[in-house]
Image (cartoon, rainbow, N blue to C red):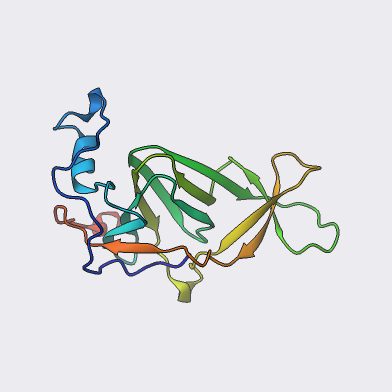
Length: 193
């Protein structure tokens, strides 16, 4: 998966003040969840939409808006730390970490084990949802930080393990961009100097 320029002007649905038909006691008008729903309503989205908020040399930040059933393919984030927070909705995450295993046979692939950290993951929306994603540092192909997609094949002799092979993005996979319309983000990263 490549980083997308999402500062484009097309808005893919949803309007201010729009609310989901289902709510809970935590979704009152003043709650953070209700605010996220108003700002990032996924009701009108038919494709995964990325709302780019900020990028600098230290990090990038944005929100993925998923319609129900949409999936980000299995991919990695080399030399990056990824912090994600589900803002609302429900999502299924399947993840792997690299393992070092003795090589046997001639199969070209990489061994991985699930659920011990998750730098290689796939995300599927169970319901319409929004996911805040922060990458530190951001994608940079020239610095070896471009994402790779994988297919996974379970290893019957080692339950819980899989062999990952590099894969192309599915032909019909697209992430569309939408402008960020929230409050201005003020960033001062000099505090740690």
